Length: 165
Length: 165
DNA sequence: GCTGAAAAGCATCGCCT
DNA sequence: AGGCGATGCTTTTCAGC
Image 1 (spheres, rainbow over the protein chains, first blue to last red):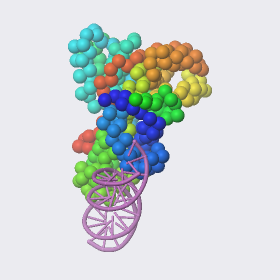
Image 2: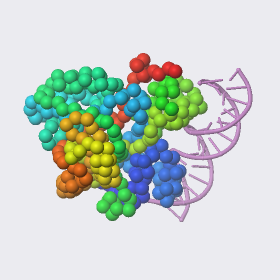
Image 3: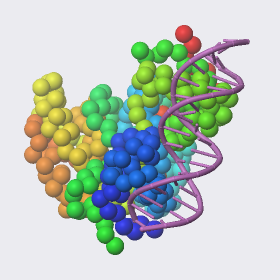
Image 4: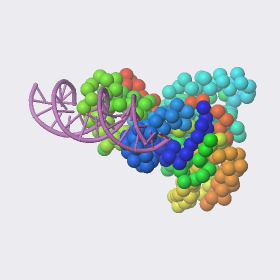
């Protein structure tokens, strides 16, 4: 299912869709240098193969009333599968948890959360501390986000990307 | 420009677009309970007002050859505007840096990076350590990402969201 | 601010190369 | 595999409520 084949045209398509997820197929085809029908076929194939996981609107966190974005570095009391899973399932149920990453390093988890204000942030941090198997919680409040490119760098000209069969 | 007005219908639209960025306007309108033309007008207004910052395809990092995702917690030698900006501008130019967050807490910056493999990750960490004004670098390699919802939680039924003029 | 019809443009299919 | 042409839907505009 993975690594079927990716030529320059596929990479260009992925790059363009990553940049503008609502681009029309006609425009996408024009930029890729092919006509619309084969372009659409490629997009569907890329979706099928799992290269494209979905499409999302990128909303303004602040405008929607979330003044605070913060990271929480969490250490647990143990690292067994059960412990890790129980913690994970617990926090993943919270809508304020936007990212939950199990990590290798000086902490067991890196979480990204949003909060309406500082008081809400404090509540969330307290709840985190009280979550199952939690030993330590360190928070880092985001003051300024200077770069936020969800996705991966793609350069269709870079031969390293081209996966020929 | 911000906070013009947001009723339940706008929130439903934002929620649906966040979930599926390529939903058709007709379907979006149906779900919001209005007809297509006003729905499109609302979407354009939300884009204009900055509630919607863009649309992006969510690509599979691993399938595209990026085996490693990691966070870097960076401490600088000072916190003056000049120092912060110089560091920021330096690392934002790297395509592997996907997120750059200035933080309040035990580190000055939280970066999210992607790397092709462990060796590439080591190179990036070294380059980070050598970047302008860097004092400390701590990395956290992501082993498993159990939740990754870019965006914000929206509940159209929650009156806290409804911003009437 | 919504509806409904109409025009233009797009997605998508089948067939041919 | 890519391209062409046809069809049905979708987007988008405009008049009218």
